Length: 337
Image (cartoon, rainbow, N blue to C red; front, side, top):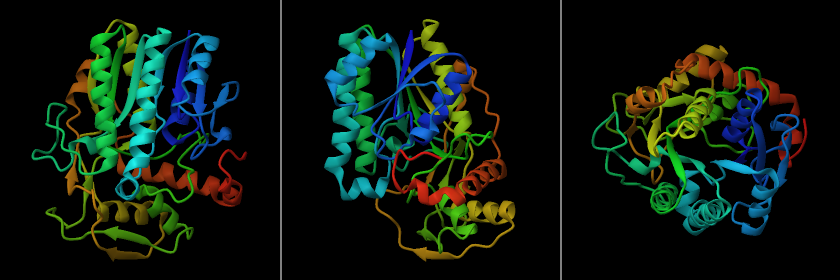
């Protein structure tokens, strides 16, 4: 049987595809290449270029490859963009997920792993935040993911489909073997932007808000290495295959760093300075969000390998240096290195 990875040519999805291929799994990727790249995928893994909302195409793909599990990454993910374009986010993140779920049920897919987000918590009253906290998204992005969570839970109750929802905190770093990493032009991830600024690939780093109720006034986030996140998906798949019940898990380390902490780490690891400019708060940004990760550690046996900010930054830095001379080739999504 085969695992369908939607968004498998993108940042997190390509790490997952490599990990599955390394483990000898049969994998097929569905990606529209809007932010993904064919070269980021493992050799020998078939790529179908298309949309998760194209039900006829997805049904044919599932039948052809005998798919029995779906790991669903494909989504729009930029909080400020979701505030500017909420309808686009509800279409891509919620409506397309609904279409994918319907095909999965009708095609007899048994296992479904969903890429959700800590943005469903909004600005939580208690930090670290547990999976039992009441969701209170602050952006259309968070709402669009929470809506899909709700659909998935209802579908799981009504049909023979078991699921795991993984709520990501702030994903960073790259494959230690430098096979793939965060490559999207104009990406807004803090560590990527800071590393690019340190390497002279961006003129500066903007810090959005310095008056939050945190020790240094800047936002605090729980940064998780992308390889540890991919391992969480592998653990979730093992859980479902062994008959484990549907569940929701946080994916974070349980401690946070401020924006200024990240800037200091990038300066330290890169041995370079970077220009920083202060800017107003952005809509939809909570002050502090850190995971309570006890549940995933206990129930899935998940043990992080890269829980160290300097290591995460070092891997991100190595990836940007790998990309540096090839950046022009990335201006067309799907281009090859």
